[in-house]
Amino acid sequence: MLHIMGKGYGNIWHYEVNTDKPYLSYLTEYNPQEGIGVMPKRGLDISSCEIFYFYKLITTKSLTEPVSMILHQISESYEENTYLPTAAAQPSLAGHEWLKGMNRAHHDVP
Image (cartoon, rainbow, N blue to C red; front, side, top):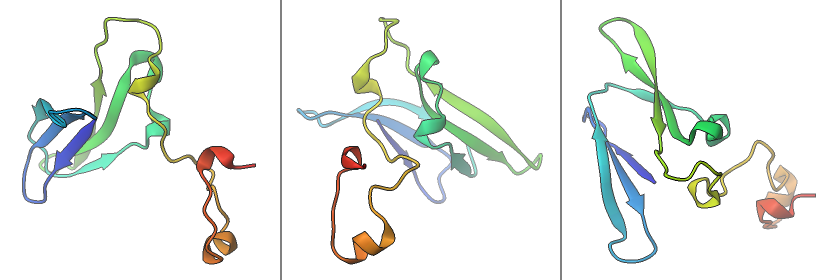
């Protein structure tokens, strides 16, 4: 999924990214918001098919509101294509390795 938020806009647009045409399919729009903070993917509740979690800033009340985006699926089993590989808490390279020009896929981390 692709979530688009623009500076100065109060909306968040959600699209599905595909490898075939059409490459982007519009899903939904969420509004309004003045600012958000996004939860890292490792903090999502995959047992409820949560795909996006953010904290919406409500300036008039000086608070944040948690907002959860749930993918409604027909199947109740885990679907691997819903949660694609993402950055982990452990880096794949140390700083000195990266400075030497090394490159390593995260799944190759010892």
